[in-house]
Image (cartoon, rainbow, N blue to C red):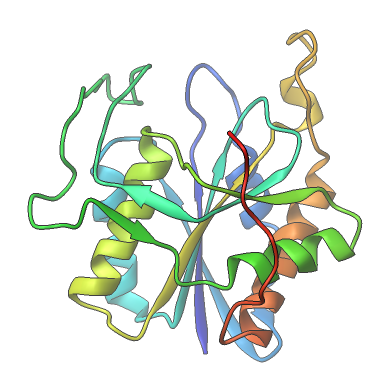
Length: 213
């Protein structure tokens, strides 16, 4: 089995992105699965192009994309991506789309086909805060997650894919008052636990994972 992990380059004046810092630490084999990695540009639609090329090169069984959610306290396992680019800030090439469709022939939304609640449970069982998230936003993280699941439907019918958001790491919040962070070791561990949960669960577990708002 082959698993493709992706992480993003820094954006919004940050010098590092914890998603890529954690991904590049992951070993090349977990439970007899080969792990491949690619750094994704924080640029609308170009992110999807880079992912598509890597998927064509290695033909993975699972794609797990990781992104930064600064200000979060937990690992966020995303449930759904929507067919909209709507940027509050510019991407790394100055693009700032408003209410733009990602793929005209795509669905309004695609749901992760990973066992998201099993992933959350696995991470929580190891003492790391995690929860199911019902919005991946409308920035490049959502753009990439949507593109991944669009490709899974249109071209790679047997592939499983999803997205996880991770918090800032401590070095990013030194000058950000009252902003939470998580140490990189725990983020790395959470990604490994997520991979193990995916390998151990063909179907998701039944567990409350909703939210009131």
